[in-house]
Length: 189
Image (cartoon, rainbow, N blue to C red; front, side, top):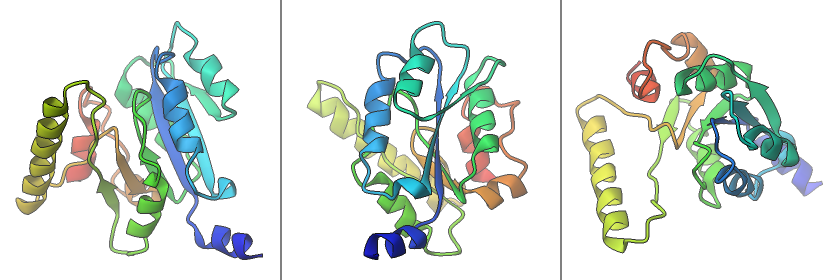
C-alpha cells in the first residue's frame, strides 16, 4: 500500500532520448534510466530514432521502451517529435550517449515540487580517461550555468534538462530553425 501512495505522489515523467546511430552507447543510457528508483507506472521512456542505419531502434525495442521514427534528419526534429509525443507532466531529456546519475529522476521530482519551477538543467560528468579534463570541464560548465542564470539568460543543456509539458507547449515547443542548441533557445524563452 505504501508503494502505491508513493507512486501516486510522483509526477508522470516522460524521458526523451533522441538517437541517430547510437548502438554503441544507447544500451548504457537506457540501463541508467531503467535502473532509477522511480515508480515504473509513472515513467515513460521514448527513444526517437532519427533514421539510424545501425541497430539503434532494435536496441531500444529490446529495452521495451517506446520507439518513434522521425524522418526529418536532425537533432532538433527528433527532440521536437519526442517532446510532442510525450505524455508526461514533466519531460526529461538526455542524449543517447549519456548515462544519467542513479538519482536523476528523484532530483527532477524534488525540483518540480516547487510550482514556480518550469525547467531545470544539470551538470554532466564526462567519461574521459583524463581526470584533469573531467574536473576542469565540469568546473567550467558549472561556472557557465551560474553566470548564465546570474545575467538572467538561463541555459538548458540538451543532455540533461527537464521542463513542465505545459510550459513547453505555452512557448510553442522547440524552434526547429535552430539546428544547433535548440535547448538554449528553449531555456531563454
